[in-house]
Length: 241
Image 1 (tube, rainbow, N blue to C red):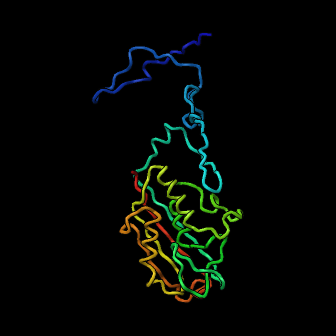
Image 2 (image 1 turned 180 degrees about the vertical axis):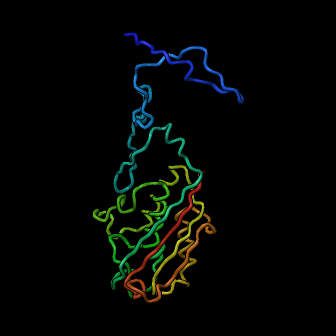
Image 3 (image 1 turned 135 degrees about the horizontal axis):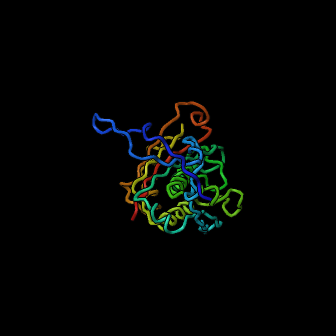
């Protein structure tokens, strides 16, 4: 249906050019529709705020223990997220109890207590595994090697670290450098640090100069300082091959 235009008095509208004001020479049509509300939150029907939906597909990682799924965006989206490097952090803590061996970095350390754990309780290797998995955006060590599985009772933690290294290479990365800190009151680790560092570098397939290891006491504070537990922190840098 056509809408009638109501004339507007030309004498009531003027334009300004420089400093001279001149009346318009003709009438302007005026619509009978209400003026648009500048504060309206509605959008024109020709525009869509709905994000394009993409189908995500799970990627299955099969380790020696179990299979787990990680959601992955389509290849076109994933390709744009390839990073030249990735950083991961790992932490682990175990209670120290008599009757267990104290194994750190794959080395048996003489002590009257050892780590109570489902596997061999190697706090350093567990921590390094979690750092690598974290850098890759994968589940933690407890999900890939659950302590509810009797298969891993007393297992050598080098099995876990080899699996983490395999996943790292599969994703197209290698060790840039790694820095780990052990926290325990006793025993002193100075006589064993170089042996532990060399063994860790060998397990990672990395140059020993890329692996650093430090040890700190906890100044006799809480369970760490009272020789009731041991902890470790690790930061790892992965570089694209």
